[in-house]
Image (cartoon, rainbow, N blue to C red; front, side, top):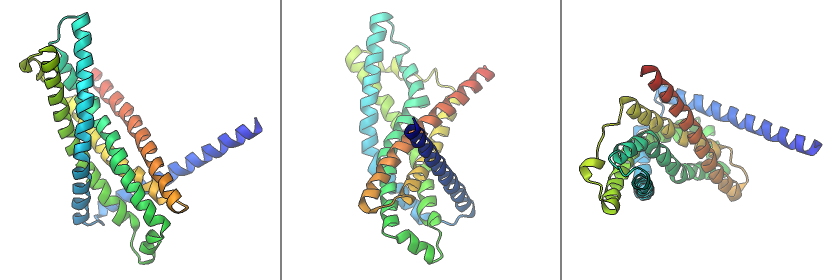
Length: 262
């Protein structure tokens, strides 16, 4: 019991220290963004790299998830209800509320977040970040702020394209497998303004959180190549956890707001 208590206490202290470090990096990044200490060319370059290298990966993932979800929904509706007129509108509502931003965010965390953690972690263990500080340059201005702006822009654009592609693939699946007319499936009757606001809010938050958490994992990397590998793994895990927590929080907020508005 004593050993278990010591282990739990050490892990709690470690988590608290990591949270404080992440909070400090957050405020330093906000200050850098407000003072515009970054280069626009770097933002454009990072945004292009993030989007260009993630688009196909995201489309493949979204397409398969869309096909699976629509197929299962149509199968159950046909077996239990015999009416599939609401499959398309309900699926689009789920895509906008949950699937497009959250699944897209998880995919971007594995692709972009891991790359950021590996790059910054390699710079950290080879003392390149210390060299920046010795030259009077703030690593946050050069390494974090441009990537966060690029992440927000990329997440918004990829979220929109992913939602459109997912909905399109779902419609084709419903038509091919269950003969659901396109005019019935491609219906936006259930979409409300708060659904779109929730989608945009999640995309912006995820686009900010993923580079921030990944950069923090890179900054605390230690121990050569092994430390870089650990930072990459840690980045994916922590980004995924933060995305799920924000998904729950934002979803609950808009659910309560929708009920309050009526």
